[in-house]
Amino acid sequence: MLAESIFEKEFSKETVFLDRNMLTPHFIPRELPFRQKQIEEISTILAQTIKGKKADNIFIYGKSGTGKTSVTKKVTQELIEFAGAKNIPVEVTYINCRNHSSKYRALIKIVKDFFPEENFLGFSASFIYEKVLEFAGKKKQLIVVLDEVDKIKDLDDLIYSLNRANDEIVNGSVSIIGISNNLVFKDRLEPRTKSSLCQHEMVFPPYNAKELSEIILQRSKKAFKENVVHESAISLSAAIAAQESGDARTALMLLLRAGEIADQRSLEHVTDQEVRRAKKKVEEEIILNMISTLPEQQQLVLLAISNLSLQKQGIKTLTGKTEEGTLFSGEVYKEYESIANQSKNGPVSTRWYREYVSELEMYGLIFTTNSGKGFKGQSTLIKLGFDAKKIKDAIEKEIVDEMA
Image (tube, rainbow, N blue to C red):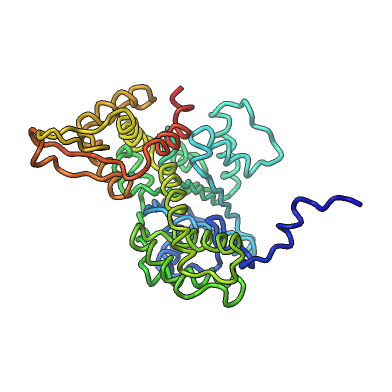
């Protein structure tokens, strides 16, 4: 007799879920509540392609979990379906710029989507670019979606090349949709790039607690078995996410992890108690994920703060008291300069450094205050809002290979 499979117990175990994938960031629902205005605006712009014309470029930005990618994928998918039914030559390629972080890699992704039978490994960037022209030149209205566009190292070159394509294509066109989590990212683009990429700009605002409750309720009905999730669990998940970020992903992840806790404890219901237990774990997941989506220069500033936080005991006040984990802004900038000098782009000015510090505080990753009484002179004091070692490890995982 064969021994029982080690997975038999898990397979036969009772669960509160119907389909846990409904709560993951990868699931794109057919209905996107509270984003109808954005859906209509993007649809109106892209509708030019079904008339055989080039659509204007769109730049979409906002915090993580505000629906930017979901809305863009929904609209472009419906566009493809409509164009296909009407036999209109419209094509869309979606590029995650975290995985394709250079002009060459992005162009390779485009041609692989449209020439899947061909192998482009080892070919020059100019050859790949010509293949893009060849495809779009067959009366194709091509839309290139660049998600996390700020991750492209030579973005100005990529945008210039894709826009220049429209000067060389007679019958087709290339349009760009750029998506970024960085609210002020466009201010760092070269003027020629900004003018060409940002023909239309859209900001996706964070969801409030009421909106998050409706989003979670909608998903929970399909994710969980009937009458499993208490109303209090939904309300608490929405309240936590609204208070901290207005991020739908955070709210959904809280409920997902709460459901997992219920399964682990063989509970029949998901209550606010499971959400509270899930909160700490989710906060860590969200913060580490947020760090991975930051632009490289912000990551370097955060790495400098982490390094110094691990190296130093803190700052001594004039009274001899030690403020543990606290750093002077000036010493952080010097550490940042040292790290950034090893990168391709080098350090930014002190003005941009201060902008980065403000943004990191806005994301809840650091806290700042004026030195005030007890310190000599006036300075900005910086303190991490999360475990320094975990932040350092997360950032080095992202950038050390690139800087080597």
